[in-house]
Image 1 (cartoon, one colour):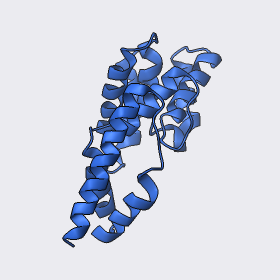
Image 2 (tube, helix red, strand yellow; image 1 turned 135 degrees about the vertical axis):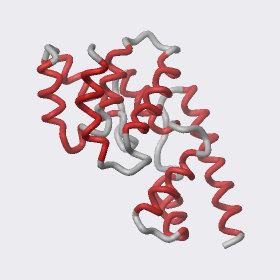
Image 3 (cartoon, rainbow, N blue to C red; image 1 turned 45 degrees about the vertical axis):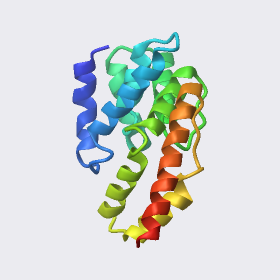
Length: 174
């Protein structure tokens, strides 16, 4: 795997994304995935490809496939990578362990305060009021997703508890 070439390929796809979904987002997911992966017998290559392509596959899956093909990967390996990239998304139920690791890494990204920080920033970027963003968090995030790995479940539960307490306190003072 040529990680420099992979970075060169994906970076343009992240340049137009907001500050919470740009290339730093990929690096945060990958960092969490590498921590989770220490407990499992897997290859780093699939996680790395999957994380880098996380934000590319929703709109540019075919371009990602062509890039991987040019890297000399087999059709079977390309399908595995694309599957893991898709499974990194919160709404998907991952199957292989690599998909579960990336999925859970996406949910626990940034630690327990990050759900609130990310939501406030993306809400502001969308032009939402604070009340609209709070409602969005309550209706679309809290209690809607779950992790698959035991170590990630604990971290995600802490994140949701923090978010609920934070919002409760915030709403008291609005």
